[in-house]
Length: 279
Image (cartoon, rainbow, N blue to C red; front, top):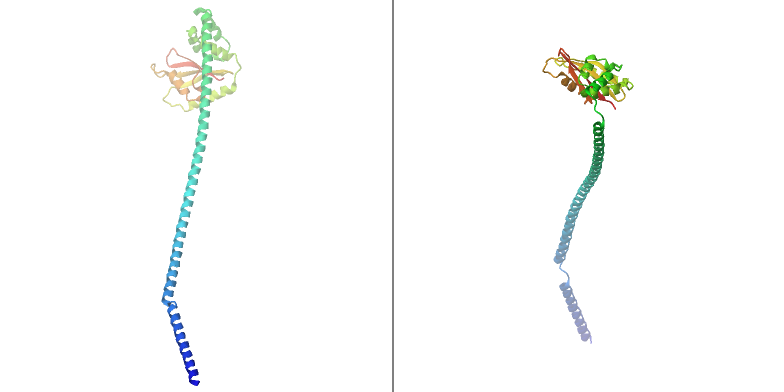
């Protein structure tokens, strides 16, 4: 009885030990390898580091791309602003050009109208002269003598009057223009302006040029007559032409409407007159 019990217990212990050993063997076989675990962890860590590195490069490139875009956008805005400014300037230029062309056309039209009016006046004057009876030289001489006898300071230059009377038909226009000036009230402010202008010209005249003097000056509402004497240093020198060119330096004396001159008997001086329109 006791041997059977001991034999059973031995068999049970032997089975238990064998089972335990087999269990340990199985667990030892299926347990994970520490080196493999560490290797797998290292690979995962390196992949994460590479991903972080790649992410940093992408951020840098993205930042550079953003900066490039901002610069390009700013340059585009500058170019766009310049384009708008140029368009605005072009519009202003086109508007100014249109206004200028319109003004030129208006001026051309005004000039054409004035020319047409002058043509009509010339035709009317020619027709009137053709229809008017022509006076004889004797009648013209009598008329010019009567006009020069009118009591006025402009008729006080005897030598000049005698020269005008020598050719009454040619000089009647000048004498009639003078008579119209004498019939109008004197304009003292215009007299003073012309005297001042002539004084300035005399003051800056070079010593080597001919001397000249003012014999008479009278301004009315419509015109002025200036009577002058000028030295004649040589029979071949046109002193009066020189004087007209010299007086033309003064804006008030540019382009007289009428001019007349003659030489004295001694030929040492010339004298004459200019009539200026002041209207």
